[in-house]
Image (cartoon, rainbow, N blue to C red; front, side):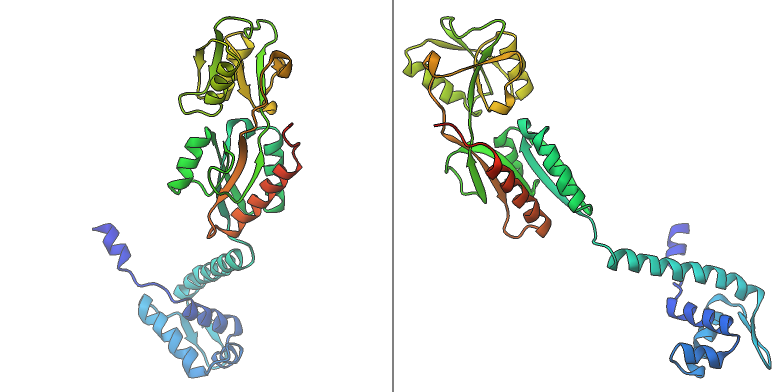
Length: 296
């Protein structure tokens, strides 16, 4: 097979190539040996090994000066390229930090705005880091993290439900449509995430505590779907303040709705994670610490 024939070809030793280049440049085995901190016989043996490998005489050894043969000139051209590539590879690996990929998971409402600004500043500080950002439901992000598919996650969870690297209270807002309000309807239509989704049970429990009838009018796993459905008058919902749009109106104590303060933002990463994961985690912790605290 042609492929196996190529794989069986001998590999050129860069040390041998460096020796013949030095001899050709110096025009002398003696001078080349001195510059290579070797002996003349050793350098001569290395050139001989190359000649035996390629089956051609590579150097003409005259009385006064050594010259490359035609085959030697051809070999020297490739040899210089190979040594140059070797030097480039060494410099690339030793002179710069090898790129690190950090797989980050964040809720959908964090995928734009302040988060992207934070990530952009981090990337300018650590240009060698490649960020792979996944957005989605917190339960899905945590599942991916537990399966080793994500290195670092910022998720929403009930307070103290799972030990995290850092956490911060998550402020929530009741929203209705500004043009087509539905809170006054009976039963009250609810726009929610799917079963087991965040805030769903809290919405239902709050309305039942008020003695209000309710129904699920719209369900979506997408935050944008929730936002659009509320703005269009399909029902009320419970979202973080950063998810409130111009087409929404914020409800609260005036409507008899309680403050929901049972959630937190939590950061998770493994103790054995790459230092760059830890560096990004510290940036996210700083972002949480600087955000406004939930109202009491």
